[in-house]
Image (cartoon, rainbow, N blue to C red; front, side, top):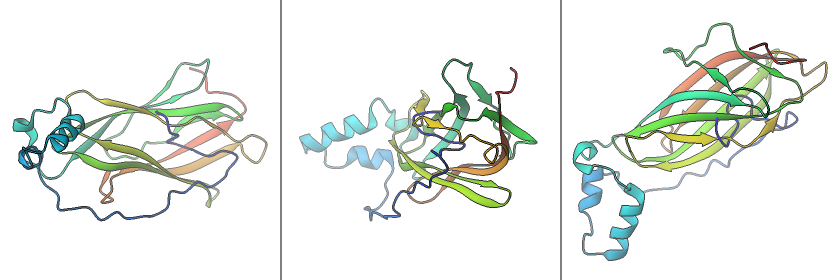
Length: 201
């Protein structure tokens, strides 16, 4: 989990939304085409170097569509070992995926790898239900990333689980990682629980 709160990013069950503003961009091009454009413009050359870093354009530069693979997910809470969340191939963890202690601070941390092309406007979207009623809906912008061999790590902002008799119990949730074109790189449908104490490790 990273500076954002994946699995249940609420704060006292409040809703948080990012405005649905669509930015009109120019035609998409491969990294090789991008690297060849405006070679004589020094400011653009520096900007592209900053954007692309050490990307080997020859190895990835012929593909238009970016690819993002979420490698690891974990729940981080102060004073405790991270709760590592295995990602099933079908995106549907069986049974209760994890347990959180009521009234506890936590954050989601995740690592991901970008390949083929630049991914623009990668974002995290999460919806949570309890007894069939939506109790939280969140979107968090993660950013724009160029392809590289090394994985990126991101942490969601810290959140605090709700507490009290009505907060405890079982929840269902859907988490998605999408880009500006609403291409979904990972969708997870799962259940989790909030209890009086953490699950024994």
